[in-house]
Amino acid sequence: MKKLFILILVLTSLQSCKKAHHDYISFSGKIENTTDTVLTISNRAFHKKISINNDGTFDDTLKISNKDFYTLRTNTTNKSFLYLKNGFDIHLTTDNATFLESSNYTGGDGASSNNYFIAQYNFGRSIGDPKNLFTLNKVDFESRLKGIKHSFDSIKSLFKDIDSTVIKISNQQNQGFFDFLEKNYEAQHAASSKTNKLSKGNSSPKFKNYINYKGGSSSLDSFKGSYVYIDIWATWCKPCLREIPALKNLEKQYHGKNIQFLSISIDNKRTAGSWEQAKAKWQKMVSSKNLSGVQLYAGQNLEFIQKYQVSSIPRFILIDPKGMIVDANAPRPSNPRLVTLFNGLGI
Image (tube, rainbow, N blue to C red):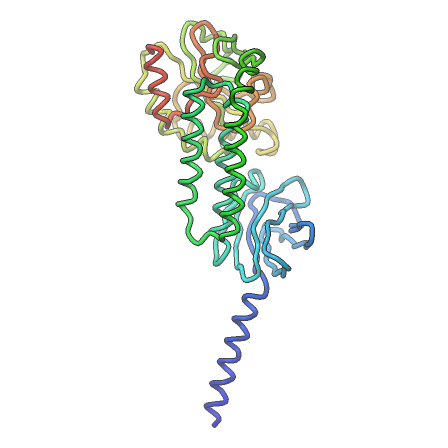
């Protein structure tokens, strides 16, 4: 009888634990390089503050009324989002400098759904300003849109056990974006052709006296007479770093040809702590990764970046030998369309 009582007690405890597991959310994590002390999770119906320890770690539980997307904020300027449902047990790791972009979730239920949405967001940012797509001719626009759709679908295939609500919302957002582009292309393309200063054939905006890694400074006019392929990047940008091998191969492939490869770092004090530290991070990475081509640092002189309306990186620009724009939003080094473009220009 005693053994039976113990067995019943154990089974009851297990059922109780199982019920508790599905009754609240376990949320922990670590934010690298932060001095923030509070993490706030909220939406219209929920608000909770979680303390961040001195080492950037946090660990708490919360209980919500409905599964939904929530805003995640620190007590400075960082902001992200996450999908929550009672029963989730997730662990977040991220960096203070790239709070949303570098967010990664591990653990049990919920990790895959949140990583999927972060991946979708990061790819969406890499597309850049949708207005730039309207400057493309019809064939290039349709090809670019097809590639974007394929990429969104490919991202979905990378993650398992995504919550059906997350997939539904993601599909709705993506379809809304595609519908917007397709319905507005004709009118926006006609308007952009008349007013867009970044259209093909227009004079390129210029930069002057950017710091050259090899010494001194360089200006865009220094490279007149050659095609110029510009990579706008930063040391903290993971998509930028993923393009480095392809860019190096491209530079070898076109060595001795009438084209210069320029990489412009936009590292700044917000991500590095100070302008001097930003410059030092750029110099260190150029050295450690043995980056080739012409390596330049924009520093505080962002007029060129602003005139090209750079809203996300990496961003690639192609300029002809006369200083005219060939493509203000050129294909990435890893995209086979770039070599096709080069060959078509006779480079």
